[in-house]
Image (tube, rainbow, N blue to C red; front, side, top):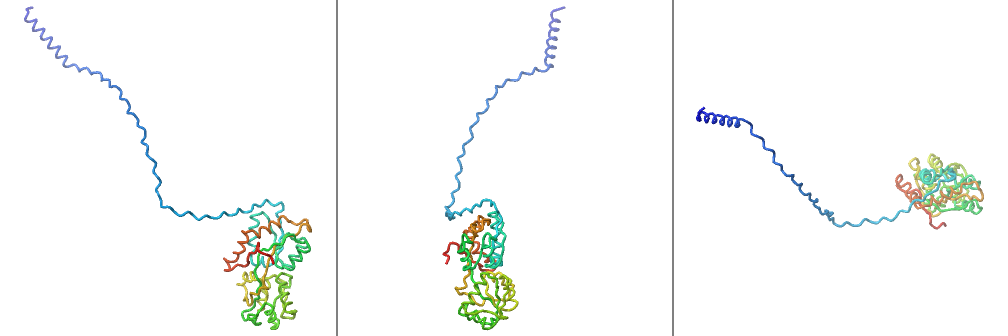
Length: 329
């Protein structure tokens, strides 16, 4: 073969190789290794200064409240049964109906109330058939104490006696100058007068007034009921007569009566109540611990305050006035 054809053939081979190379896919370059990025430094949280409380205009300091005396803690009674002998006025006014549940709640004593005239109540104490007495017959009370049947006698409260009758006032006692004068006018007019005749404190006061008037009441005009105060008021209201009553019972019963207060205000008509514990030296089986707890409770500041307010919400006026700690004349 001549030189020229070889050269031609060689050129064709070169051109073919170049053409095949151009048709082959280009090789993929290896990815460039990027050095890892260092994490950004973490900054400490910004310290936010505490917000100052808003300044308020100064306010006046609250009024200091005096400390309240802690209520007396009563031990659980060994004998929770207690017998109270009392006058009918403390029952008929509703006072004991309010007080006794309070006493039970605070002390645990269950009080059985025997409401009779003060004379009968005092006799229950003399006989050892009651543990504690709440009565209003001072002379008879002092006699009981002098004979040793009572251990302590403590002033509790008072109200007063008034003379009530029909609004027409047939005996004219509105013009009386004293309670004694009022009784004289009633006797002279021979208008119905109802006496409890039960040796109660009220009956004792009534008999003392007749005696001071130098009169012995008798006859059809002088009605002896033998009943408590509320019942006697109802009887005399029906008969349009007069009677002597404690003010508290009259106020409590007033709406059911056709009676007015026709005489009041004589200092001799003061009506004083005492609590008496029956002497365990005379009657060892009485519940003296319970009696003393009741007597002390009655004259406590809390209960004296309750007595002062009793009746005001319902009747617009108190039925009793507290006297604990006052001189006992």
